[in-house]
Each structure stands twice: as structure tokens, then as C-alpha cells.
Length: 439
Ligand SMILES: Cc1cc2nc3c(=O)[nH]c(=O)nc-3n(C[C@H](O)[C@H](O)[C@H](O)COP(=O)(O)OP(=O)(O)OC[C@H]3O[C@@H](n4cnc5c(N)ncnc54)[C@H](O)[C@@H]3O)c2cc1C
Image (cartoon, rainbow, N blue to C red; front, side, top):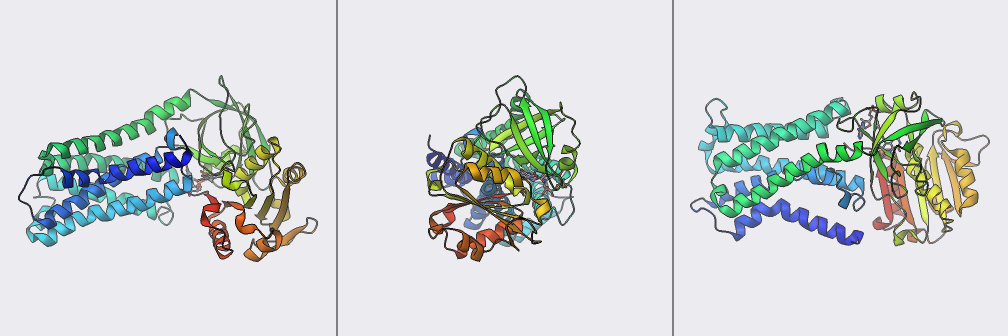
């Protein structure tokens, strides 16, 4: 099935599932005798809950969807829908209260019946998940600790929301509504089992081993992996995988990295990793022979689509060069001769990863490289400062608005590049960004 068809199909199914309880409410007979505001508030709660529960799906990294949507887009939608679901669910008791102030009694945790207490516990967990996700960095929460808390709270929400639904039991007496919620709950449980049991089991059957670690500049290492007992990973240039090193794939301890080698070199898998924290700092200390589990490939930061054929402009900052290296090596192996332009921003000349490799690639490919350095270089031909729209216009051919752009680097750099391209009237559909940030 074509990528576009898969994308539309996935979106249609997803939206239908989110609104399933409302669709059933509107189309099938429901128990009578409740006023509009009460129905309205319950439907907000139903849609909000189905939206919250279905958050498992986009982040479950299901193979059918793995390269249909870009990772950044998936996580952005996940964040927006999570916040929206909190708002909808929050409005449910608020409207009930305004409609009937006696409902206030249901907020007293000591006297409220179980059906209300379960709803309150679910709501509190939902608010907590939203706050800890949005403010994770401000609260200085360690990523893995936050991830564990996030999964625990998601479980609490699901369990108490189901108790609330079953105990209130008004709309659930309609057979069609019971079927709708059964479908929703089966999907929640199915996605959770897939993510936490089936997928790790599949990954555990295709292990890799650390073959060697190549030190690059500026605390960056290229990790070269070899498959153990299988024929390696099929991926497209520019894709991402999650790595577990020396730990079981059933744990939450895995980190995402772009594959940095050629998609045509199947006997080894390369990742280029900059040390910034606990996991990434451990890479330089590996000795070789360690077992690595690879969950991937994912993402659509790839130059394969017909839209990219006019020429590619790659805007990279620091370690954001990793997926670009995969793209360049793959295109070189394919003897691709489309026009390529690389603008590579770094702090200073001594901190440019892959400088020699890029120079070598520029001889094999129709590639023009512009190094942009914050500290001006003495020997290397380069531009000073940051990548600006003025620089892009000066270096690119006149048809720059017809070219396809890949951006990868720190978040502020990506925002600045997207603004540059917008100011240059490059259509948004010709810009593909990979953010090294997920929550
Ligand atoms: C799609 C994607 C591709 C990436 N590709 C590369 C790459 O090719 N090379 C490279 O050097 N870096 C890459 N990164 C960044 C890399 O994943 C983080 O630097 C690394 O996970 C940090 O882990 P740490 O324990 O060393 O640092 P920490 O100090 O624990 O974390 C630093 C920050 O990294 C993020 N992070 C930490 N753990 C995870 C995790 N398990 N999943 C997602 N984010 C996490 C959090 O925002 C955290 O605040 C990529 C990130 C993403 C999202």
C-alpha cells in the first residue's frame, strides 16, 4: 500500500476511534431522561477518555505506521492530543457542577460514592501526567524516571476510568455503547501488550554486538554494530532506532539515535553519538562485544520520495549531521548525481565531526559543502556565525524554492532554519525536520 494511502487510512481509523463513543451516542438508541448539558458533559468526558486511551497507538511504533509519519509529527500530535484530552475530561465534571451544584457533594473523597472517587483518581492522574510531561525539564525530572512515572500514571488512568464508566453505568446500559467501549479497551490493552511484551520479545530475537567504537571529535563516537545470527536491519537512509546496550529490551532504558551509515551496508549498523548524559557518556567506554538490542527503523527523514529529486539542501547543526551522513553515504553508494548542498553549523573548526569524511563524499557526489562556524576558522574555508537566509540565498541556485530541505540539529537551530525557509517562501511540504527531543 502506498505511503499516502496508508497515512490517510491510519488517520481516518484514528479519528473514527477517538469519536466512536460520540458516533454511537448519536446513531444508536440511548437510555432517556437526561438533559442536554448532562449528555454534553458526558460526551466530552467520553471523547476525552477515548483520546487519552488511544495515545498508546501513535507512540507504539507499529510497523505498518513506522515510516508513514515523521517521528517529530507523531510526538507533536501525541502532546497536543494529550493536553486536549485533559481539557475535555476536566470539562466533564465542571459542566456537571454548573448544571447541578449538588454534584459538588461528589467531590468530597470521604463521602463520595465509588463511581465518583474512581473518576476523581483518574482525573488527578491525568493532570499529573500532563504537568510532569509539559514541565519535565523545569521540574528536573530524569528522563527514565519520568518515563516510568508516565507509564504508571497511564495505567492508573485506564483502570480508574474503566471503573468510573462501569460504576456510573448509565449510557453503558445501551448495548452499542458497551460494544464501543469494549473495542476501545481492547485496543488500549492490545497496544500496551504489543509495546511492553510482543515488541521487546521480537527485538530480543535479533540482537547485535558492538564490533568497534570509533572516536570522532568533540566527545562523539561512532558505534559500529554487527548482527548476531541474523541478516541485519533493513532501513532507509536517515531513519532512527532505539538502542538498549547491555540491558534487556523489556526495560524502559532505551535511547533514540539516527543511523549514520549507508542503507546499502547491511552487514553493519552505525550510530554516531555525542556524550551529553548518562547513557551517551557510556558509549565511549564500551570495549566491544557488548550485546545491543535495536528497535527500529522508524521515521521518514529520508530522501527517497520523488519530491526530493530536484535537489537536496541539508542543514545540520553539530551531531545533527548523523542522519545526513547516512543520507550522503547511501546516495554515494547509489552513484546518485542530483544536486546536493550541505550547510553544516558547528562551534569551531576543531569540533566538526566527520570533516574529512564529508570532504571525501563531496568528491563522489554532486555535493557543495558550506561550513558555518561560530568561531571563525583559520585554515578551513568557511562562513562565520550562523546559517541565515541571506547565506542560503547567496550559496544556493536561483531555483532554491524548488529544492527539498532536511534540517537536523538542536531545537533552537531547527526553529531558526524553519523560519529562514519560511521567509524564503520555500513551501512547508518541502521541509523535513528531525528534532532530537521527544518530551
Ligand atoms: C529522533 C531522535 C534521534 C536522535 N539521534 C541522535 C543521534 O544520532 N546522535 C546523538 O548523539 N543523539 C541523538 N539523539 C539524542 C539522544 O537520544 C539523547 O541525547 C540521548 O538519549 C540522551 O541520553 P543520556 O542518558 O545520555 O542523557 P540525559 O542527560 O539522560 O538526557 C538528556 C536529554 O535527552 C533526552 N533523552 C534522554 N533519554 C531519552 C530517551 N530514552 N528517549 C528520548 N529522549 C531521551 C531527554 O530530553 C533528556 O533531557 C536523538 C534524539 C531523538 C529524539
